[in-house]
Length: 206
Image 1 (cartoon, rainbow, N blue to C red):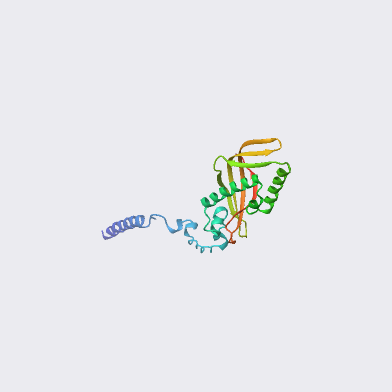
Image 2 (image 1 turned 30 degrees about the vertical axis):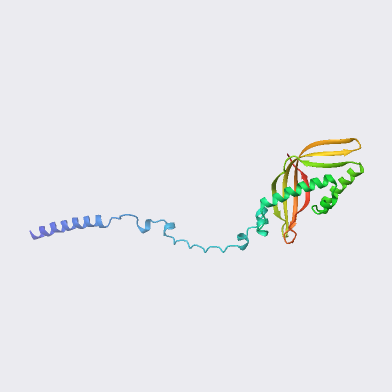
């Protein structure tokens, strides 16, 4: 009888142990050996930020920004107002053959060109006067500082309507004109002279 009871208890113990093993021995969730090698790899070490290159921090200013950086007092509206006054003065002085006025406003190369035209008109015995029908329109086309120098350069687009009266051997002629031109002015920013000089004249589309 005792032997039979021992066999029964031994069987029950085996069953209980088997149940415990089936529960405790089962793998629950992801195990370390299931983790891909890439996930077990140590986190990458972040390299320190590269020191900023001074050359990248320095932005080369161009155009109007460069001009204002060199001459903070430069004002576009004030400049264009003065440019319109200079435009009318130059056109009238050229028509009248007033070389003294032109020399104060023009660069030597431009003066030489104007002087040649005036001399030719004088040789033909003709005189000319100009009357502006409206105040000329002036728009800034571009502005800059010549690289590595103190020379500022500004190009202005002028639109103007004027009446030209020409007198010559053949009599008097009246001509109403509408012109579009690009005038380029220069000035040394270190000069005490605030005036700008006309250095180039180009035709432009009306």
